[in-house]
Length: 523
Image 1 (cartoon, rainbow, N blue to C red):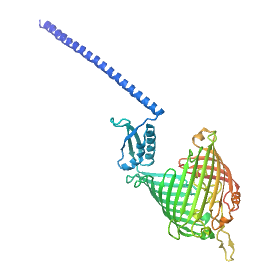
Image 2 (image 1 turned 135 degrees about the horizontal axis):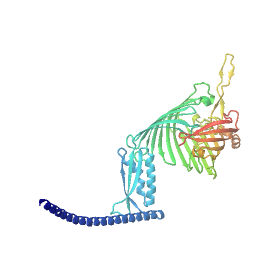
Image 3 (image 1 turned 180 degrees about the vertical axis):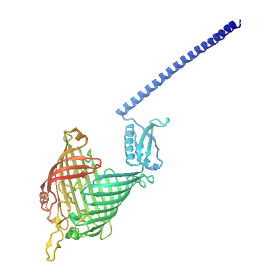
Image 4 (image 1 turned 30 degrees about the vertical axis):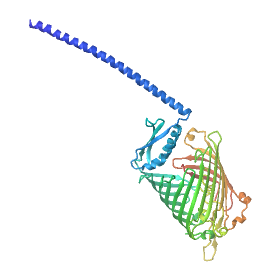
């Protein structure tokens, strides 16, 4: 009988437990239903909030596209700088507080981002616009988050142009960034060009110095140039260059250098021999520049203008080189509308003259004179008259016979050639028609062709030579050349493979028809 009792008791217990489970299940179902309803309501609220926020953003962006939205910058917060001084970033970002509309704030933020990146001391710059304090409606906070460079040491190598040079130079630079946290860039450089000119230099760049609004640069340099092949002298200069004022359009530089001219060959002409020895260069140089071209290497539209004024002799020393030098350069690029073709036109002129007591009978300093020719492309050489297709370095202008030397006991003399002396007045003009090739591959690589024509002349004005100067005679003695070529851009330089045909030259000019290679800097 025990067994049936057990059988009767077990189901009761189980039935009782099942009833409780059923009641608990019903309660749980009710709770779950309530939870699902609450989640559905929360989802609906969230979707409603997202829709409202989306509508607000759409209305906001629609508004700023069609009307000015007034706003005031409450604060500029700078983050991420551990080494760079706050005042440096604050000086760059000061323009943000001048914005009075959302549109102006966007434009100012973009400009500030560019200027901070240009300091070359940050790996990244992020500018975020946030709303101001709730109690100050119509205000915004600007958050500038910078990441300082992890590798302050940087090495560079490239091919560059200088306005006063007649060729491009190969330069290697080693930079160290932000040593003291002032945005300072310290560098050492080595440069060498095809005209046998070498330079060793070291300098520092300070974007802000003692509250000045423009950068300050200082550079020590040692230059050496071998001109024995063309003008029978070697030049060596040791000096200092100070960039006093520099903006996008203006540049003001002071140069102080001790210059030495020597003639190791002892064959220099009398004009060169009179200038051998030591001289002190103390000069101020002002450059005004406007460049609205779309590219400095291959302009297809826009114009450019450069004016450079230099005055030397700002030192109370008898060996100080006293001269005035003025250069002008005007360029214009006209698009033609097919095969990305364009017509580039350019005219440049320069004049140098000594000043002081008896200046009219004095010669101008030999290194400051104008020499036309070289391996630079006139299209890319902006700054003054230096280049002329088809003519070699210092390849035209006034010349003078070199000293004759005794070659045998019979006193028979041999002419040792001529020295190119440069000129006090120089004018150069050019026209260049560039075009893409039909090949898509060549166009994608930037390889294109061009037809060109150039003309120029150099004349002496000093030592009373201006009395015999006639404009008609000057223009009739222009040297000229035409040609065709292929332009190949690379990461380091732009190279031109040209065939030049000399239209006009004179007996002592160094220029001939044939294939020539020209270079230009990509920056």
